[in-house]
Length: 78
Image 1 (tube, one colour):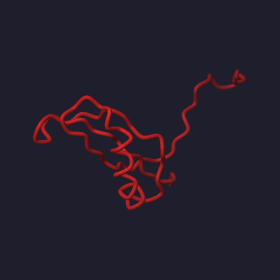
Image 2 (cartoon, rainbow, N blue to C red; image 1 turned 30 degrees about the vertical axis):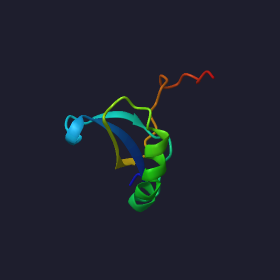
Image 3 (tube, rainbow, N blue to C red; image 1 turned 90 degrees about the vertical axis):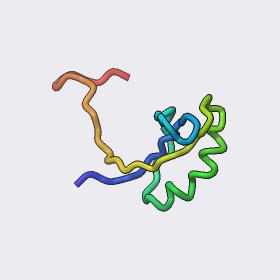
Image 4 (cartoon, rainbow, N blue to C red; image 1 turned 90 degrees about the horizontal axis):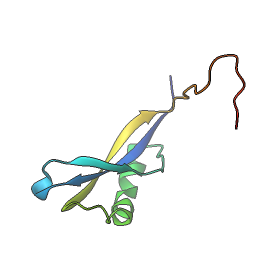
């Protein structure tokens, strides 16, 4: 089983929370939904520059998955 963590999506919405779209994702990763939710007020203040009438946030569970970015058998270049 892959480790589970949470990320916070910052959402921009029209008036009345209509037509919400993901504007950005915070770089922080949280070990629990509660920790993510507790960080929400500060994240909303940091992201108040988004050009929408309403800015909100949503915590989302995700797993850590390594993605192979090179061909098998070839050394990685850095």
